[in-house]
Length: 550
Image (cartoon, rainbow, N blue to C red; front, side, top):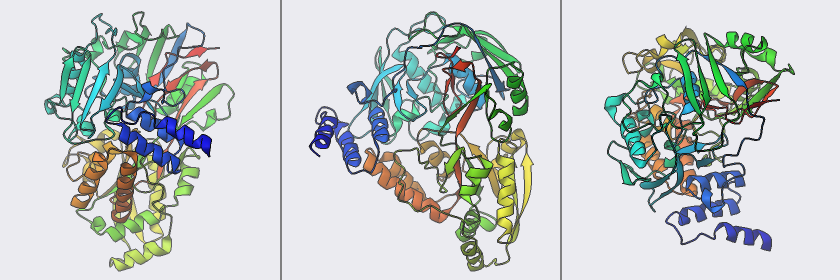
């Protein structure tokens, strides 16, 4: 007991030194009470910028590559959906390419621990409304120019400008506005937020994949040179064919091990599986639906990390049968979530509870009851809603990964309570359309399924897909009580307050059920058994600087 008390006193030793110390000490109290584990405590230390105080989690700092240098790593990717522009990209292949050359202020590691990138440190004021970031010195862009605060300010001014078509606006809108990023001196940047945000460092980290730091005068044309600050430089890029990158001799960090990284684009995942089996590539994405043949083959290595990625079933709350929340609840109660994880995902995931709060997040409240399959209750809810015999409805979705199979399983589950679902499965271009209301089957369908990628916090999904003015609000869920609860969560600046606000949001979404999130899927990659040191994130970044061949 004395030893434990002394250890806690050591964790609290910073008390009174910084405005964030009260927030840190509140998290230590949570740890002492058993409400969070050590890993989540260390994640929170990194969030507050305390990594430099020796509080970072093990492995949080970048390590010098220890493998054998040399060689070419060959990677199979799906074909990027459009031009590679860091400001506007949103597809996984483009994100994977960008990771070879681009870097972020902060790196969100696969375990959701933040570590310094182009930012050496960060801190907030006592209210988490002003965040100050110290920029790393001695960093050069590939064209030889030196990185400074001016480039960082210009990058975020570009990302927060509605006129640029920035995809990052889906994350930053309402949080950081154009004009809110300011240069303090040559190597210090200040972010003045629209409202307090306790998770802001995640929003300027690699989680926001568009937030690659670019030269201040960037005006497009990225494909011509891929000019950024990363460990590899562009060798050549051919749209719809492939790309290659070579070691950057002027990189500020440890020199990467491979001489080259070579990408080949494929039309579909089965083609990638055939390519790695034939020895044409060394790394591909893995899907339980198409890669089972690789599972027990000693020639390959399966890499697996936890993720907050999920498929979101939206139920339109403004028209059709799902205006009644009892009907929305009934459909959610038909699903056997444990069975979905075991069968659909082959065990590579965890059960969801109809909100974006993954078990990975420190702020998720585990005390909120888990929704389970209950056919009798579902039938009773339909009867209460005046449709005891069910009804017919169309489910519209995209042909992507496990989603078509999931749609069939939902169709079969709904049949148990009399809901007859007709499936409309489209290619992704048709499903997303122009991704604006009135011109998108995604945003306009009464019932649909959409894939949502990994994030280090739930903020982006809570904001964009469920807030009344959210740009991804396919459920057309406009509820002022939700908006208020979301504002409370977003502005909570210590971990106990975040968890308390999260619990209210989780319970509210269970009651309203504008979306069904029945599972969170792991992120998987396949490499040749001879290749080690490959790192990646569930958000599709691929890192090969530490990769080497046996």
